[in-house]
Image (cartoon, rainbow, N blue to C red; front, side, top):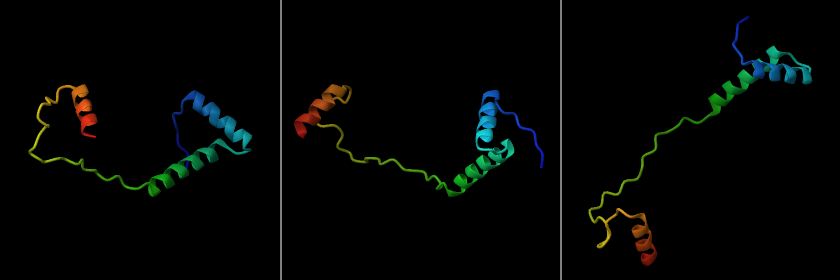
Length: 81
């Protein structure tokens, strides 16, 4: 089957050069690339939605912490650990 493709000039030049070095044709190179992508799509695992863990506790911050300062939080973590 014949079809028309719009391919960036630089990409086409690289593809033609590769096909020539491999003593192949541009058509064969494009077909091989399409087959590789189609096989990879079949093998790729389906992406699952991941749920983020959520803390539903009611204790809040430790006494004396405002939660507005990263430095304050890091200092408190250093003291606790």
